[in-house]
Image (cartoon, rainbow, N blue to C red; front, side):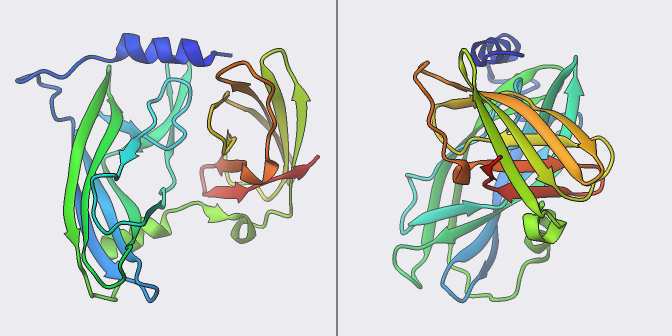
Amino acid sequence: MKTPFAAFALSVLTALPLQAGDSFETPVTGEILHGWVQADGTRVAALHLRLAPGWKTYWRAPGDAGIPPQFDWSGSDNLRGVGITWPTPEVFLTAGMRTIGYTGDLVLPLSFAPRSAGAPISINARLDMGVCSDICVPHSMTLKAVINDNNQTPTPAIAAALAERPYSAKEAGVTASKCTLRPTDEGLEIEAHLTLPSTGGTETVVIEPGQAGLWMSETKATRRGNSLVAVGEMITSDGQPLALDRSQITITVLGSKHAVNIQGCKPG
């Protein structure tokens, strides 16, 4: 198992700085797509990323060797909150390491909640991300748009991306989600017991603690019939004792047919 420090060292060793005229300067471009307004006044939009051939970027939980995207919306006006709907990502194996992310064109649906209903929302945000080919490159971009759409008809590209999200637990037929926790020298071992039909092929199970200051290892998953068991370890960044709120845990199962997103687990 790689520690958080080993993963950080790997990202530093493989990342190259961008310089003017460098052929890797723009492996990805991005823009905000306008969408529609919902009945509650929330405005639906999307981030459209175009990745150069052979390049990929990462999901919110990118794996040990990945770089998670970071959004800073603080430069925006009339913005109370932002929701992100993540389409189902791909699982990559490179040099024996697993990462999770996207290639090609990525449409990432966003929901913008205004502070003042009915008024335009001015987006001025920063996105810090990692993009990788044979090397990994840290990349930043500024996103600007004025969202003032009164259209109530869903935009096809954004609607299609929303349809690519993982199934909910109910949609996927999950009948049980339990977690057993055991202390380790550095944190907690978590063993998730899920009861659900197969999602297809070799399944990858990603566990997100849902709490700041925690690092989660890759899991080892085994299936027998409708029972899927995944085991991993959570480690605190400061070495302090760990108190975990099971209701905040997110478990995502990625299979060849579909993916499932499960919120929370009961004591196992």
